[in-house]
Image (cartoon, rainbow over all chains, first blue to last red; front, side):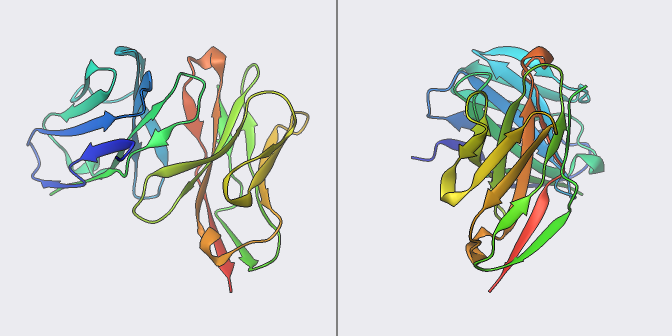
Length: 112
Length: 114
């Protein structure tokens, strides 16, 4: 009964491939996020959805495309993967835009 | 523009001693302030938040933080540190005027020595 779950936990892939990371939350929250944490542990927002509507879209290459089929799911698709995309990607959710976030365990993406 | 500063990369404290992890922020309007903790190979866990009200906020695992508007600070404190408190701590700020985008500090690694 994990609150925010991401799959896969680890992803190793070659440059140029396309991959997806899935995220689901069972907390009934309205808002979901994707964050990127780099090797120095810096954490940066990538996207935020509120009630399936994209509300935050940071300066992220358009190779990254989020998709929210419903309020409980926010998937991240990445095209033409590059070495610099290697990082840990966290999905999170919150009850609303002003509330604290609940994070998934992360997906460690390694591009070789 | 919003910003958060955690001036210490690392804080070392002996078990049983009080600990402080510092955070200062810059934001337009009234800030929403958060502290999160990250253990190795885990996602972030929420500790506490300040939105309005009493400047002293109490959170999980015995942690508390004090909101100081004049100094634009939100330092995390605990009266008596445990070895199990050793982790990476993040301060975060969210401004309603900024589309509720959350900005995280760079993180402070806390080492508690037995």
